[in-house]
View 1 (cartoon, rainbow, N blue to C red):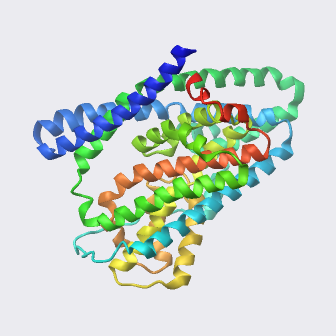
View 2: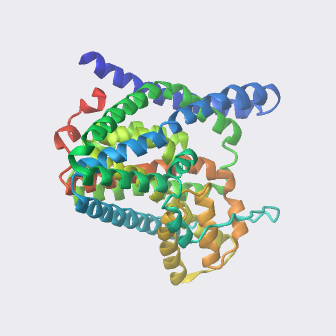
View 3: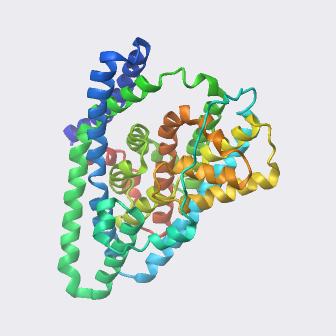
Length: 425
C-alpha cells in the first residue's frame, strides 16, 4: 500500500516538474531566437514530435473508451426512465453553468475594461469559417453509419449510438448478460491502458509546454495585457469560486476535496488544450478518485467534453466586450444579454466543429453587429488562453458529474473523502 501511494505521488510530481521545466525551456529557446537549428531540430523537431505522440496516445483511447464505457453505464441503469432523467439534469446544469460563465466574464469586463487604450493595427485580418445551423447539428447527432462516426471521432454520434446499444441491452434482458459482461471486461482493459499511457505524461507535458512557449514567448502577451488578465481573472473566479459554490449548494460535497483530487486532470487539460484528449483521464479521475459510478460518469463526461464549454464561453464574452471597446462601439444591455443567450446556445449548436471557440465568437459578433475582423486582434494570445480555459471546461464537466451523481445516489462518498483513493489507481 505504501509503495502504491508513493508511486501516485511520484507521477503527479513528475507531471508538474515536466510542466515547469518545459515552460522554462520554452522561454529560454524563445529568448535565444526560435530560428535556424533551434527551430529545425528542437522546436519543430524533437519537441513537436514528442508533443504530438503524447496527444495521439491520449486521443487513440477516446472513441473506444466513450463507446464501451457508455454502453456499460447505460446497461447498468436497468431502467430506461433513469436515462431521460439523468440526461435532463445534466443538460440543465451544463446550460446553466455556461450562461453563468458568460455573465461572470461580462462582469469582469465591466470592471477591467479590457479594450481601453488599445490601438488598432489596420493590417490585421480574420476570415470567419462557415458555421453550420443548429438544425443541421441536431440532424447530425443521428449517425447514418456508426462505424464511420467512430472512425471520424464524431462524439455526439458515438454517444447516440452507444446509448441506443446500451438501451437495447437493457431491454433484451437475460439474453444480453454475456454481451454486457464482455463490455464490462473491455472497459476494465481500456482503463488499464489509460493508466499505462499516463506514464508518458511527464515527457509529453514537457514537450508541449516547451514548444508552445518557444513559439509564443512572453512578448505576444504585452500589447493585450489587459484583455489577457481579464480572461484569466474570469477563468479563475469561475473555477475557484463559482464551481465550489455550485458543488456545495447542489451536492453538499466538500469543494476543497474536489480541487485537491482534480489537480492531475487540470495539468493534462492545461497542456493538451483539448477536452477530448483529456477525456480518458477525466473519466478515470471522477470514477476512481471522486467515487462517481460508471452509470453516470460514462454519460456526463463524454457529453460535457462535447457540448459544455464554460471556459470558451468566458473567452467569448470578454472578447466581445474587448472588440466593442476597441472599435468604440456600444452594444447596450440588450446586446450583452444577446451575447449570453447566443454563447449558451452555441455551446451545443457548434459541438464538434474544429476551432469552435473562434468560430462561435464570429457568430456572436455578427449577431450584435460588431466587426468580425476584430477576432484577429486576439489570435496572438488565444493559444495560451486556450490552455487555461480548457481546464475550466473540464472542471465544469467533473463538477456537474458529481452533482448529478449525488442527486441520483450514484456517488460513493467514502471514495470521495478517502485521501488514499487518489493514489490507489
